[in-house]
Every structure is written in C-alpha cells, then in structure tokens.
Amino acid sequence: MIRGMDKIKVKNPVVELDGDEMARVIWAWIKESLILPYLDIDLKTFDYHILNRDATENRIITEAAEAIKKYHVGAKCAAIKPDQERVKEFGLKKAWKSPNADTRNRIGGTLFRQPIVFKNIPRLVPGTRFRTRFEERGIHYEHRMVDELAAFAIRSSGGFVWACKNYDGDIQSDMVAAGFGSLGLGENLHRHGRGRVHDKGSGNSDGRRLVADDAAIPGKDQGISG
Image (cartoon, rainbow, N blue to C red; front, side, top):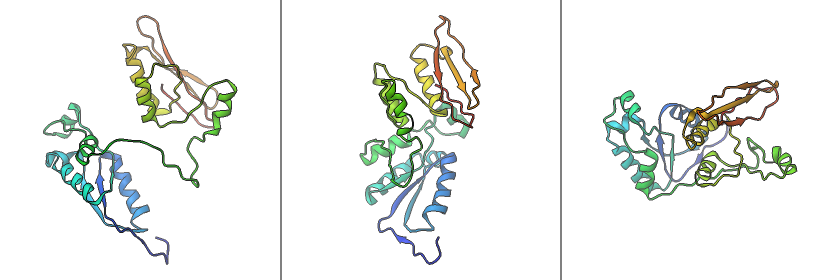
C-alpha cells in the first residue's frame, strides 16, 4: 500500500471461487499484491480445489452459487474438470461435472467472452502491427480471442488462415488434424528469429500434410504449433 493512502472501501461483498494448480497460486499473489493492500473488501471465499469439491460432493458449488445470487458478483479461478485419469490421480469418488458449467447453470448465467481494453495499457498484439501488410495483399485481418475463433472454426466452412501462438496453436492443430482423420498428418515448421527453420512434421498414410508456419519475432526464439 502507498504510504498515506487510504484503502478504497468496496461496499458490496465479492464472492471468491478459489481454484486449482497455478491458477490458485497466481490468484493468491494477485490478492496479496494488487487487491488487499488497496481495497477494503469483504471476500466471501469458496474453495473450488478438486479435492474439496470431491470431499463435499460438489456441495461447495451449490453454496458458492447461492452466494453469487445473493451478492451479485463473483470472481472464479480456473478449476479442474476431472476426466478418468484425474479421478485416478487424485483418488476422486467420480468424474465430477465441469465446475464452470455447474456454477453457471446454478446461477442461471450465460457464457460470453470479450476483451477488456484499457486506454493506458497497450494490447499484446497491436491491431496495426500486421494489418497494413495484410491489406497490401488483399487479406482481411482480425485479432480475436482464441476461444471465439475456436467456436468460429468449428462451425465455419473454411476459407481463412488462423495464426496461433504456442499453446493455443498446439491445441487447435490437434482439433483441425482430427477432422482429417488422423493426427499423424500434422507438420509443424518452427522459424526462429535468426532465420533457422525446423521441420517437426510427419505425414499420414496418403501423403497429405497439414502445414503451419509461425511468424519470426526478431531477437527471440518463438515456436508455434498449428
């Protein structure tokens, strides 16, 4: 807290849904460093850790949902939706429902994703950085969130190029490759800032290949799967 500065009083309690793994660690850091030193806030905490959901047989989600309906606002960390491997890993009673969907259904909510843009915080990928190059080649350029574009790709008939970075590209390439019947058709080209290109591909039985290329970032080694 800045010396001589009073904390800002938050009138309404906020429901806090703690999560799993690194989301739990990062949220704790955010609270201790960026929230609690500056805000006088009443956090109503519910532990969404996978072991606590299992121990309470998801009653914790019911209680959290009721609190959200009472106080009208909640902040949720990422939490594990367990598959059978996670059931074995954590010794769970069963593969519980998605905590996201369960919470949303209980409060009668809906799902939407929209970036929150602040004028004094630059965007990670400025819209003007590549737009001119695309427009010179007659290509329409858009910068979208990966979740939005994933939904668009599933219902689309194609005709677009999708540039992904790192983990997003790795996940989405599996989805696209599965549409061709085999993950074995995938090929990744990794271009580094110093001009080296690494071929990590493998072809499927009929010789077709799905090729993805990544943009080089000067001075950095940047691998992109897609």
